[in-house]
Figure 1 (cartoon, one colour):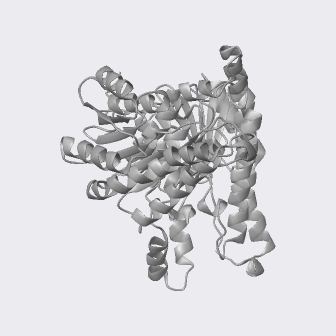
Figure 2 (cartoon, rainbow over the protein chains, first blue to last red):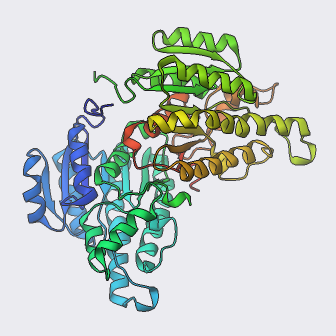
Figure 3 (cartoon, rainbow over the protein chains, first blue to last red):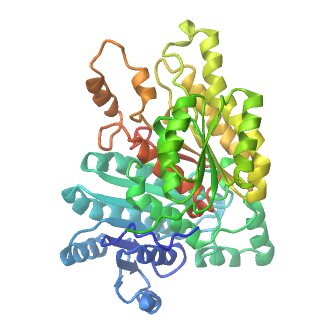
Amino acid sequence: MSTRSLRRFADRVALVTGAASGIGWATAERLAAEGARLWLVDVRADALRERARVLPSARVLGVDVTVPEEVDAAIDAVVRDGPGLDVVVNCVGATLGAAVQDTQSDDWERILRVNLTGAFNLTRAAMRHMIVRRSGAIVHVASDAGLVGMPSQAAYCASKGGLVHFARACALDAAPHDVRINCVCPCFIATPLLDAWIATQPDPERALAECAAEQPIGRIGQPGEVAAAIAFLASDEARFITGIALPVDGGVSAQ
Amino acid sequence: MAIATRLLDRTVIVTGAGSGIGAAIARRMHEEGAYVACIDVDRERTETITRDLGERALAIHADVTDQAAVMGAVDTARNWRGRLDVVVNNAGIAGPQTPAGSTDLGEWERTISVNLTGTFLVSKYAIEHLVSARGCIVNVASALAMIGWRRESAYGPGKAGVVQFTKSMALDYAPDVRVNCVCPGAVRTPMIESVLPRDGDTAALLREYGKVHPLYRRLAEPSEIADAVLFLASDDASLVTGAALLVDAGFTAG
């Protein structure tokens, strides 16, 4: 089997947030391989610039998605450059390992601001342009934690569950304008975000083994596997799909 | 134009391949390089689709509710090329358009039998081959598995059963075999035309039916469902199992 000949994004303009690492970077690589004209966004502009050297045609912007003015300016820059904005993939995410009774208010607010308000800022800005052209697809990276409850993940679950439901509501607003909005819901994926969470555990090695064992497929997912599902939802092959939360989770949410 | 090879040399079974969504799935998988065993209860339609596909296609006439016939059909498909990589359980019927009180037991049983038991039987006899090939199953359920709908008292429950069967099998056979389903909205097929009032203007009724979809406000084309089935059957879905993929243009999002 080969996906090397796929060119579903030839001449399409795609913007990826959280692009410096993990699922965001894997998505950038996948869309680039399929011919997209890429705009890559991350709050860590230097790290992104460094990494994006291997994608010389990609444009790089340092943007904090929690600041609406920065997001609006980034989307305006893409649209000014032309010819339009076809695909937005939102891969920004923050985690917090804390039971609700141990969750600090400022941590709660930070998780919701990054995972949910950031998605709102981005969707609003992108939609305003996409509806004018009556075309476009937005894919948010939510999580299994947006579909099922998980211990010590109260703020994260709330933010991702909110994101799944936000995307459904947005899909209905976008539908009359032929714009599609969907989510993917990954399980544990080998990303810096997972590494950071694992590092907070009392026995990190054991925690990682337990993460793999918890998933019916018995392993941690790879960022490229999530990127492949994102690419499908962002492509015309998913033209009849909107308002969904696709589990990309090795069976976790089926149980 | 890019050469499509996402299912290159895979051996695929598609049930209900003679018409509608099944025919579109068979064509789409064939385009991607698969060897397609087309199973249908209608002998003529099975042979027509297989002839249309040309090379890399095999016609198998079988009723998915007949245990002996399913065993034979799966064997034939498997022996064709010595392996079986993908099974698409698509065979289905619309069933009675009546509330429970006026639904005939025979019609209820027939609907559950084709839509749910047929999926079970084909999966039951194919699974050991799929384990060997580390292959996958894609079932065709329905958006009506997720929500209630008037006068679908047999079809909805049967399709909801397909979703649950999908999840159970996904857990039992992980990580060897991925098992997923698609849940289409209303699709332009002979099946949907069969449930329209006989005396109406078919084109107008189909246009009206399409308005259930917030996106585009039209019926889905069978090829639009086939594209989603192709994704689930391909290596691009390597991390997807136990999923019910809605292909319903936002129908159940609201």
